[in-house]
Amino acid sequence: CPSSPKPPTSPSEKCGVLNVTKITEHGKKVRKNWTSSWTVLQGSTLLFAKSQGGGTSWFGGSQSKPEFTVDLRGGSVEWASKDKSSKKHVIEVKTRQGTELLIQSENDGLVNDWYRALQDTISTHAWE
Ligand code: I3S
Image 1 (cartoon, rainbow, N blue to C red):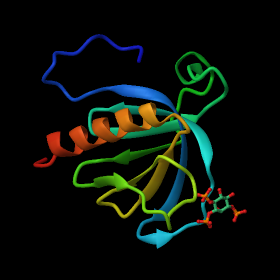
Image 2: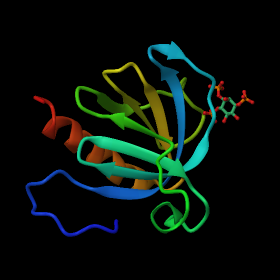
Image 3: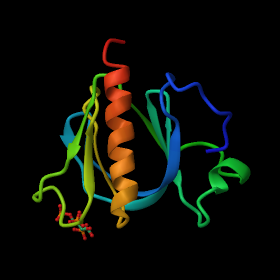
Image 4: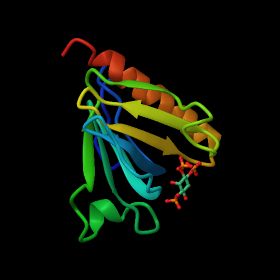
């Protein structure tokens, strides 16, 4: 991520390209729409922007606004069950606002890192 280094106790900041779809919005089921998204974890916020190849265009290019953001405080993260998706390495994120997302990559190491980072974030911000 193009950011200054953080002291070890601060929340992790992380970014990369992931496949993402909403499955629920405000508690209501929505149609899946898997999209390759430039994903940034910043404090307790998870931001998504359309990936335009190369993965870094979000910062340098004209697309400087995230497509959507979710607040992870009070949310949960778990490995998605088989009935949620036929894809491999799928993380399910639920927010307190009633949004559910699936996050996926073919790269299992990358997905594992995100899983850990999201869990850390949620526990770090649990009492806010
Ligand atoms: O949970 P579903 O409905 O089986 O999800 C699949 C569909 O959203 C499908 O799109 P359409 O039904 O709109 O054509 C997607 O192409 C699939 O990727 C979805 O399933 P996976 O298992 O890939 O999450």
